[in-house]
Image 1 (cartoon, rainbow, N blue to C red):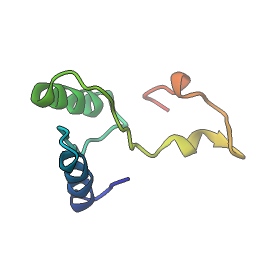
Image 2: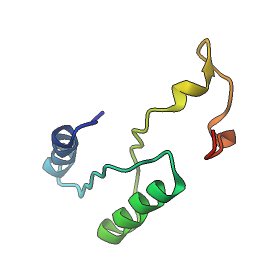
Image 3: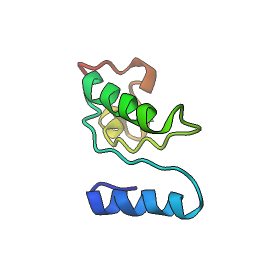
Length: 79
């Protein structure tokens, strides 16, 4: 969806143009520290979210010929 700050701003603006609250964040989601920071900041600003668009793109590393070799629930932070 969005990787650069300008793309993130455009996505957030599209939601706000629909009359919704939106917050984009750039976070290191490969660590629990980075993910927790993003969640804390978002909830602190907007309250409990109604939905989340998670655009972290590392899951392809855990596939084997388009078959999930490791399920999302089984991926550890070390992986």
